Image (tube, rainbow, N blue to C red):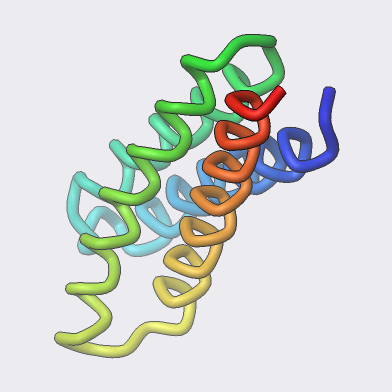
Length: 106
């Protein structure tokens, strides 16, 4: 498995668990979206461990959507944990796009 794919997978697994921890630590005050994205991100982290391009596409698109939503929430009120989640989303999207471009060139 390519190093960038391993990094993206590890980041997604970490942030998936972290989203769920944040949701349950706040007793659901962060909204159900936090838990939903936690499950989605964890599943994407597992899927990236498998070969193929479709997990890369999913892992590029869904964290981009989550990062945009998180950015909107950050504009309303700053939360350092949410800022970390958005930064991880940016890193995952960058890794996946880089891998998709590399696949097309090969």
